[in-house]
Length: 287
Image (cartoon, rainbow, N blue to C red; front, side, top):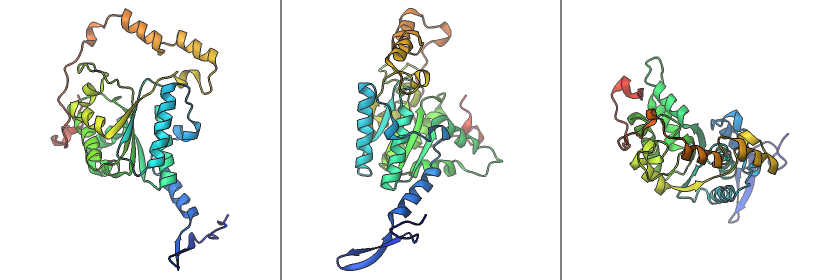
């Protein structure tokens, strides 16, 4: 159906300082935003994730929602991104996707969504001689996007190559002051030998960059993947009592179960480099 304003021309007259000229109609901007969203690599699973549908039942979720809304309202005049971290199922990815969609629709931003392990696999696949893409063909949009969502940071197995690759992404966007939304299940432990900590998984240099380029927002709540949306009070209580992932049961498991001998604390890997430096075909080997 043709637009009532431009009647399908995608242009509309505007008078400025007594001079009439043609400018793009709002319908054209909305159409371009939706086209860019289709190219943003947002998985189908998250197609219904919007800020308006985010459930914020706990204080930390309400705080995260306020920060997300403020980010959208102030974009592009923002100088810091967001790092949403916490346990599984508390809405980190939902909120990150909602932010990405909002700034693309209302601010005309170009953005992308990448799950961290998927991004690393795409880069690693470029070392296959049968693949025409280069590593910078993959990383170029990631480095230059107006806003980037990097989901599940730290889920990948750490290695020098992983730290260098992620270090390049973080450092480049840090230097270019391009806002990034990260989500992660890692913890910010002062113990640098804790495998689930940011400093162990990413290296001290990258963690330092993240501390400066992002507001860190810790989120807690029930695992919505287990209890489902709009969970009743009874369902939440059952989850707290019976789920191995509930805070009480996790705490009990940590305090009562000795660490298996095969899971001793690891040695902290070297800090992330700011440039990719690896020898040819071995670059993708993270063993």
